[in-house]
Image (tube, rainbow, N blue to C red):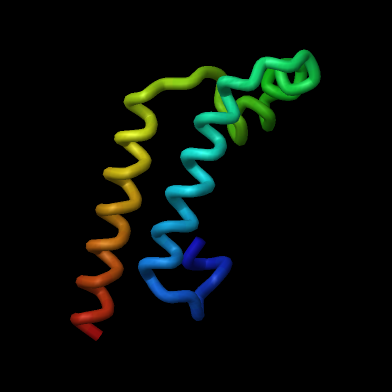
Length: 78
């Protein structure tokens, strides 16, 4: 998100990242036939995932938090 919105505030980028990750994860609970067919493709599986896992939500939070901390550290150094 930082590449797409370089002028945005860091907290906004982190919030948007979490929103997108959580949206994709919860979208995996939706099981209509058209989205199942889309998930059967390689690109669909890579983008949409294949199954909902609570542990993925924790991983997303941890990853965004670590990225946020690294960005803060980088900005303070420069």
